[in-house]
Amino acid sequence: MADQPARKAPQAREARVVRTERITPHMVRVVLGGEGLATFGAGEFTDHYVKLLFAAEGVSYPEPFDMERIRTEFPRDQWPTTRTYTVRAWDALHRELTIDFVVHGDEGLAGPWAAKAQPGDVIRFLGPGGGYTPDPHADWHLLAGDESALPAIAVALERLPEGALVHAFVEVAGPEEEQKLRTAAGITPTWLHRGARPPGEALLAAVRALGFPPGDVHAFVHGEAGVVKDLRRHLRLEREVPRDRLSISGYWRLGQTDEAWRAVKREWNDQVEREQETPSA
Image (tube, rainbow, N blue to C red; front, side):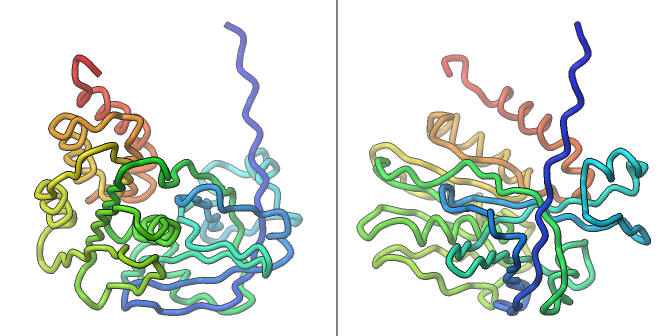
């Protein structure tokens, strides 16, 4: 077999911090702007995401910033580190991109950056990507996730029209982490307070206890990988939700760094899906 050509590095965009806001004790909203967003576009999907690029410690890159050049001239351990975040909002008129970050003190990479971000700070990113938006023809919608999935769930809830039948479960640490969302009349999430319980325990219990309405469901289920695995099994095998009516994946995994999880995420998800398919599926 002939060698496959090396995949060209995607072109990065540059943006500058316009303003920040602490919307809950552990959620920081960062609004980005600048000429680098002139050709940016989002809106087709409610789970649009971008991959933020953070320079390796002690490393500076030549200008103009070029991922292809970096991958050619720098050793792999000096390439920028990526972190994937949902597009909370995109204002094309004002060229403002809003991203919400979960922050736990100095833990992690992107969270501490967001907590300390000041107007004028520069961030580069790739994207957007995405693939889910609530099907307007579905009889009802199931949305379930933790803080990591909250931005995408919030966008979906805000896009659904009045009269849509929605069951949305969002697990957060406690009542102080709830957010006010702009939704049509009758559409509100059910907030689940984790407290001292393990991540995802309340979410899994809520979905299992739900009395499913009749008809076609379109579901979005994202969060901690172990919990997502259990929810996938429940929805596919016990509730018999067709695979093509599920947007479901682990955003993170308890006990693993982002790098470790990203390295095995695709293979892990594929394996879980194979294990949980029914013989007739």
